[in-house]
Length: 436
Image (cartoon, rainbow, N blue to C red; front, side, top):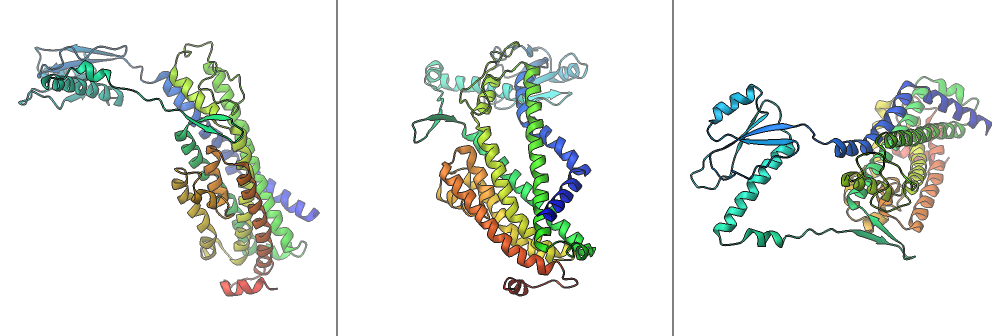
């Protein structure tokens, strides 16, 4: 057991001191925090640039429709040609020129915008909406329909989704957010397993090709070496994940304090739409309140614990297979023959995730979250939507049992393959090693 500990320490400290590990440890939280911070900054600031827009309306349909706003000032130019107006834009008198040409059918359906800079999408949409609404009103009047009557029957439906549990509890859910979160978690766990599992395979293959493995196995058993590598790399992955959580939390707290957002409730405990927003002028900003309400509706403790459990068990399962593959080949190039069959279940799981998020409680989702080779990815897709605790426990137990069985299989392959050189074994030969 002491020898396994020595191998674990060597694998751990060798990897955590690498520059790539340090860079990703600090870069990861920045990327995660950006997903939370950028939407809030956009909602806070948005497009605040003031623009002056010259309107040349030769159709005479929109004489009073373009009303100036806080950031956009519309100025009608009735007696100036569009060519002269374009020159005024070039000279800086106007930011944008809107030209609505005269139409032979008396129903304008197009316009041209001239600008020295890229016109923001919000400005384009505003112009199109104004024109579309006016044309529709005139068409209704021509057909003998009162536009006010039609406007009065328009109704906005606010659909709130509440998920109930067997104890009678209720929780508001945001399907779009759960969709995105489930996909992000699935991709993360897929990347973590492939990345750190690949490191185990690469490390074994390099030691084997350098013949240093002969010296190592003279002091420790092949099984001890394999388990030391697997556990050592898993601790590296877990360290990086914990650092991501801590650093991301620090960034969240710092940002919240900077913009004056306070969180009186712990994250994940509430389903309310907004938390107290004080000491700033964003009190009435509905966009900020909606974003915070969505964030607080996510059960972060459950998601984090589930991620750690299924990542560790999924990693241990695949790392044992990657270690066995590393012992079969003399270099990473030869590993493709054996890597593909191992990674196919993970690839199937990540592809199926696109369909599972649409029906996370369907039979396909349930069964794939129980199959050990696909459950690490599929279960993380389902967790944000809420999964019965018994399904989570059963899935984790099946994954743990499969890992134990695969460890026995991998150890049989590892102890023989690690000392073979110059020959790539066939599947038939590998099957025979299991009988030794």
